[in-house]
Image (cartoon, rainbow, N blue to C red):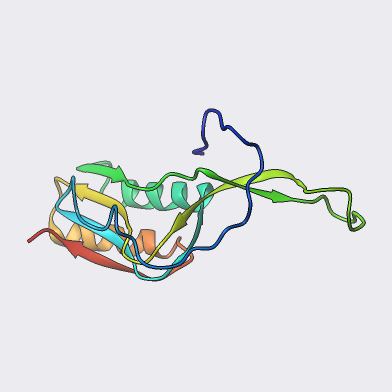
Length: 135
């Protein structure tokens, strides 16, 4: 799964995702794309599951670009631990996704193949998405 090689700080504040994606909102590489309609947090596992679903759907044909990277650590305290005694340890990595962000792009396949592949990937993601086509 994806995670940063090294980070400056092990633990981050939770933060807040507000507004719309300004950067990464257009198709830059492929002819077809999957764009987020809602905001949310995309874990490395969900991202990998979506990527595998796309890859298997097109039978490893075409080229796939993943436009997001999970660079935010999420901490969790162990089960049955009393309150206090500091913040928990990093458990997983997430990518903060704003509405309008392009998650995946694809090239070298037909429109029908791309649409079906992105529909399969969308089932693995925790927010609504839409299919994009380069004009």
